Image (cartoon, rainbow, N blue to C red; front, side, top):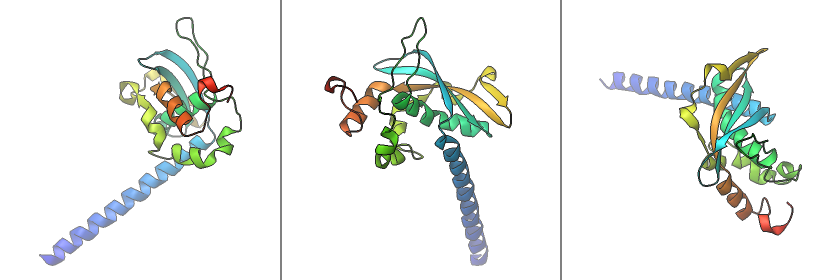
Length: 174
């Protein structure tokens, strides 16, 4: 009986180790795809209390990687790129005009955008991350996936101001 339990425990430990390695490989691939910050943003609608719904188009060889990375891309886009508006929804300027901010504040942004990082406080997927058929395209050897993300821009701005990463709105230009 003890021998069987030892074999079961050993098998379970091996299964956990293999699963951990597989998850780490997926995360590394996702991070590699994100490091280039290849994405597009379009506004969908304004949300409540300082949030916007935006569609983020992310690129990856695996659709599930693009879907997951859309959250990072959404926050990155709000901070560094902003987005144009439509007739019914106003655009949003980037939270910073400093093109070097990501490099200058690397000690802040590296952990901020790490897997499960602080950026997660400011985003949520609309429709549980479901992707409409027209939002899934094959482009060469990779996929272009559009995901609707809710970003709480007001809280993101407040957090970045409190961390000293960007200047407060009333403090002049950042």
